[in-house]
Length: 172
Image 1 (cartoon, helix red, strand yellow):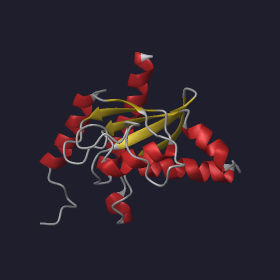
Image 2 (cartoon, helix red, strand yellow; image 1 turned 120 degrees about the vertical axis):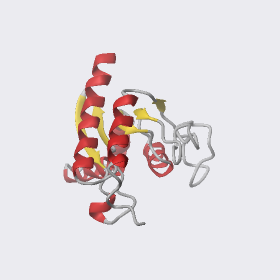
Image 3 (cartoon, helix red, strand yellow; image 1 turned 30 degrees about the horizontal axis):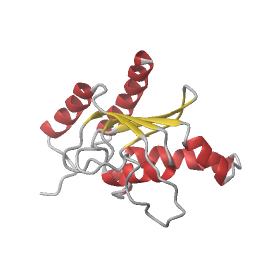
Image 4 (cartoon, helix red, strand yellow; image 1 turned 90 degrees about the horizontal axis):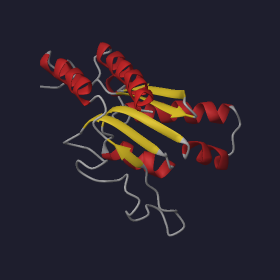
């Protein structure tokens, strides 16, 4: 399984490199179900001029669109998410971790920690199912297994390269 984890994280790293080549902060991810890549995403916040277009949100939206085209019911979509594993190069931010928890994703593996905005332990622990329900008492407790540090040095290296050249999108 460890070699599978590394292979999936390599695919996420590839997405992060694509983001960097597009002058985006280098974060990439893939979503796996039953040992198969079913979605991928990369940061597209600058390209779309939308601060919510993080790699995870891109992959989630791609998956939701695909399942909607396939005519899957909400119950089937929820069941599918509960069988998915996300590999992402950087710890999901608070927004993305909340979305992943709400959707009921099974598990997340990430590369490096996100010391400023991390939602899986660095700042908040939204992956922990003991947090209060968001909407009502009828919302089941959510949470997902989360493992950090997978290929962290590679992810950090991408960030370093990106910021050493100066973020071309940063307003001075």
